[in-house]
Length: 70
Image 1: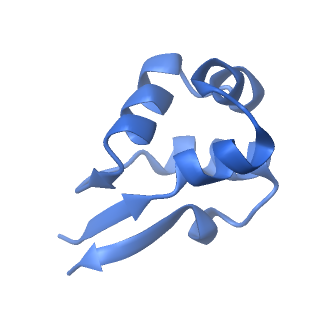
Image 2: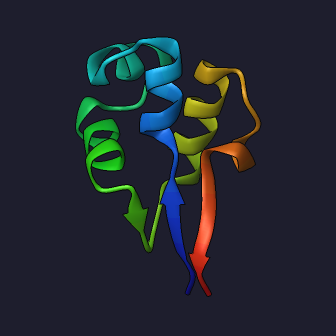
Image 3: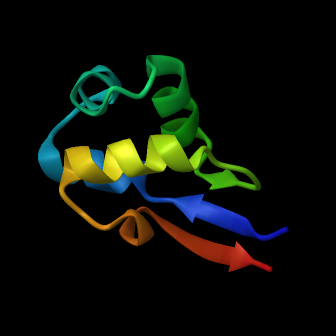
């Protein structure tokens, strides 16, 4: 299982959005967004949440993460 680094905080900063705004705009629960933004290196992620976040940021889902360990 690979380890990925999420770029949610980076995209939120570019938009000037805080955690609540990201949650409201994406429809992803606040707690999930908070976890993703505070702990960006994850072994597991919810692909549905990433899809919603990508739509909110108007980017490809692949833009939201990078593999840091295979």
